[in-house]
Length: 211
Length: 309
Image (cartoon, rainbow over all chains, first blue to last red; front, side, top):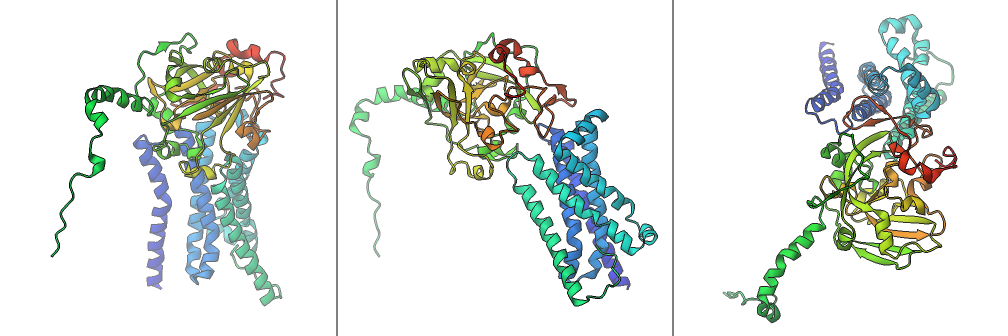
């Protein structure tokens, strides 16, 4: 159907624009020298904020597509997830480059000794195989069920990401708790949906490529 | 149609007879009254500052804009840029500080008295935040010991000094989200408080303190992490036993009572070995006692600083 295809194309263009706009905003602020008195901290927090927002957005796609009865939304899940990984890479790079200046020994000490870095590192590492296997070729190679199982790693990323944020802040936990709450709602939806499915169809059946 | 005629001049507008009769004296007093009101507001020039021998030399002063837009003042929000916005209308006049407890002559000092109690000195100090960033600021004030002496000095019972910040939830609507117990309280051992480096601060960069930096009067303790340098002080109480301190109450494993700058004792969640000086790209090594060891190390002789962090 040409009409729905062009609609999806338009949707994707808008999605790319939306997902890239934070990066342009960051660039614009840098150009205007408006990165606060501590630019490296600002960049670190800015990229971290967008990583966790896009992780929450990725996890929202499947529930929303059912709740809104818009199956085509699934086509946006991969780009949103990849943008989450993209901002995660920027966040990680900011840490490795601007915070640690590639001093490996300092970073290893950090990952081992600092729980919040350990959590953040875990969240990031879990995203790597998901980004690598995000192509249709990899779905085919792994097979739908195995691919879906692997991509459940996003749950670990989300939990570790929220913990990372919670452990980072000093005493005002409103934002990490908000992201934690959103992730909890997304998990609860999946739990309820899967219990309902089992009640409705107790016999084992083929799992869709949908986590 | 009824046309109401406006009344004559209301009585409240009538000049009182005493003012009318003494109008020359009233006019002569006006500049003083205006000046008096100005001296209490933020950003007023402070002339005739003495250069202090206790000033740190050889450091580049951090730009004023950095020190006034990047603040930890949780009563006015937990984001660094919030206090500059949310403390704009903070009322710092009239203001007084009560010096009480185990002092010979406990009493209240008006802000005007505080401004004139001892010659104001400019002291450049390094300021190291527990979050591993640092600044260099030309503070203005005098040693805390001066005001304690003005209150008759410590009695033999006094062993510690407890400080308390102003707290008003109506003026500080963000404070309820700060996550820490307020009003903000801090404490020092008496010998720390009486050390000449312990600065009772009323200004910076040649002017009275901006609200977001702790107007109208704060402490500056250059050898300790920034949170020990309590802002917007209303009470200084000399006491017998160790007083509570806000961040220590919140997480005693992370923020000790002493909280001396120490690159060898890490915060449980991050390293304290290095710091980022605002305006610099590369991190620099953090110095023991923030580089003030020659002056203050003797206060802690024989103490295990890993235990008393």
